[in-house]
Amino acid sequence: MKKVVMYTLSTCPWCMRAKKFFREKDIPFEYIDYDKADEGTRRSIREDCLSHGEEMSFPFVKIGEDVVVGYNPQKYSSLLNLSEG
Amino acid sequence: MSVDTEKRMEQFRTMFQRVIDPLGYKFSPDTELVDFLLEQEVLLEKEKGNPYCPCQGLTGEREHDMQLVCPCIPFHREHFDAMKRCWCGLYVHKDVDDPDSLVQISKKEFEASRTKV
Amino acid sequence: MVWFFAIDEIELGEGGKKPLLVEGEKLLLIRQEGGFYAISNKCPHMDCPLSKGTLEGFVIKCPCHDWLFDIRSGEFLNAREIKVPAYGTKVAEGKVYVNMER
Image 1: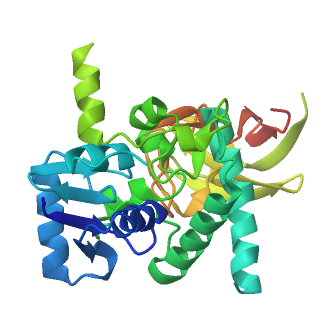
Image 2: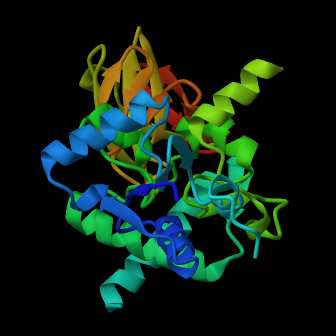
């Protein structure tokens, strides 16, 4: 199984939906709330987003080597080879 | 939710409607989402001084963060027009009836689709 | 045309700005490059007083969120569909008048 790591905001409903998606599919994931993180973590998250050519738009979801920015269950599923539904 | 929060949410509705209307946007028909986002913005204003987008990250640099004060459409117009919604989904194009049919397109995907033309 | 007296011309120097109440409307009168310009003093975003902003040439920056407006047309530079109301002005016998009909 590919590793799932997410950058999220505690205020963002799409981040909540993304977490819910992985929970419901029983897929383990790690996440960091950018707005609750310490200064150093925030800086590294920002650098990570920028290095992928993205802005800090959340959720920022890393699935293995791939990145999906935004709530996109279809993309999450296809990257994890899940059947839809 | 406190009375103050509700009152401020109503003020945001009135002020922001005025801004988004000439841009071709309206509040999302998903009222539950709208209420949630507006409440987050009231809380963000209390905590950080401004009603920032609840779905984009602040850096602490004024020039960057000011472009994330709601409604931030003017500063991300082409990108949001391509999605027919703003990033957090508080606003959608006036012709959108089913906001769940819209997907978020990342900045990078948007830029890539533009250079293809 | 409905012209209302605003101020005496000598009250406002070049590059100066002055908030005024004319016919119950909060206005901002600006003198720039010899001309007088009148706009609403309320930013169309969140009603912040533009009189507290900074003026550079014909562009005023809102003090709250840095939105930029052309004082001649009232247009918001990032989305010209959004405007702060702009009013006509004229000077006659050392007095500045504002046309409150937009």
